[in-house]
Length: 84
Length: 234
Image 1 (tube, chains in turn red, orange):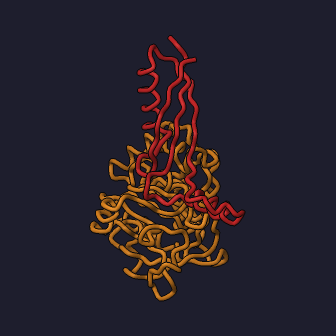
Image 2 (cartoon, chains in turn cyan, green):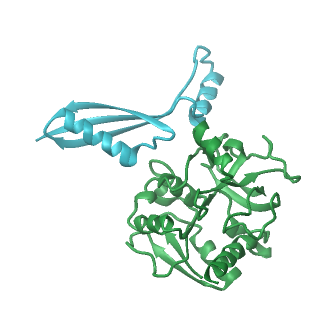
Image 3 (cartoon, helix red, strand yellow):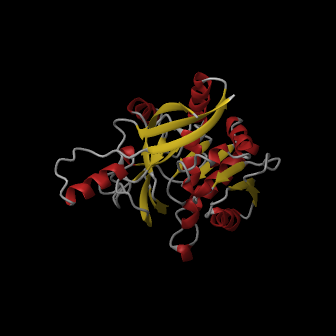
């Protein structure tokens, strides 16, 4: 059994207005960052999971996303798994 | 009529709701802690109150929707029992998927606390039967995450079945961009499920249930529920 370090990145789906990102975008523009095109703000969650394989760790992480971490109506996510 | 008000860590409108039901109807109302596994036998109405359950961690209402008492609450709703979510309670109901959609950060990301005008879109619910269709009522709002959102096809389905119960409006009952405080799709402030027994709304009828607190438009909300339950018993 290995402990796996799982990185979960959660973003609002495309087409769902990200008010926080928009506010930060405006603020950066007002500071003179004219080349900035867009800002999106999401969540970064780290999990440490005991599992026999990387695949099992990934599957468990995805289940945790479905059960609680992510609201599939408005959010999308991606998972990266690292061995420790 | 027996009412149960669920209290989560961080709920802060529970006492207001307990008081409003007791004061308006004089019926039995009990507080139930979120860690319980059951709601009292014979409960007719379950209310999920406003507040900041679990500190709004992760997403508003997400943790509360998975707390121990919620299985009993969900079972109550699925059996056809009356279930009401106000503000944070509405967010909890969407997180349980008993109601469609989600509530996102307001269009202008700030906490808004002020009186608000609403148009009653449907009186064919147990919660609004004593209002007139199209009636304009005033309930306060107090939220930072009230922008009701759902995919276009689901929005159409919700509208087509008459599931929208309250919409933000102006004094003449017009639903406009200006009358929409939070950017909710189609100005939606409150919705009901297909079964008609589960309602969620962002505004607070319990804070509009006594003249000294600024209005009595919420009283008909509680009386509608009472009247519905009386009729069911006949």
